[in-house]
Image (spheres, helix red, strand yellow):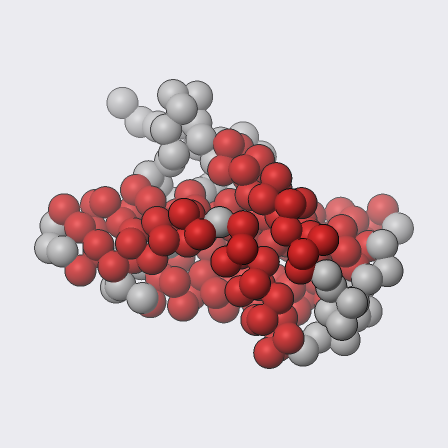
Length: 170
């Protein structure tokens, strides 16, 4: 169903951008919590779109196992990016440089993996983390590469809701 696939892509895009924006929250830990809520909300909406029963605790366990097994370096960067915000001035700047891009990429990869799983008739009960881990890793790397601008640097500003990446001023 083309309309359903298009709607899934719109949900993934919206929640990915929201996660990137949440990465800008200057309070350590609050950014990670907000991104986690956005990711769970995305999966909940995808499940609803595909008429799959949603179980929050099951979903949290899947997401934790999927992300923890694939991107421990990125996760540690994400947690470090959040924690470093506690350092006055420079910490906030460093956190802002790391968190938005990682948050956006992780959310986009999760959305793509779950949408594909649901599209093929899968449910949360038959989600095989081990089988999906490599697919998630590839989606995460692709999303991280997409988040880079022409200069090869991760964007430090909140992602825009436009089709084309926002250009840096100056």
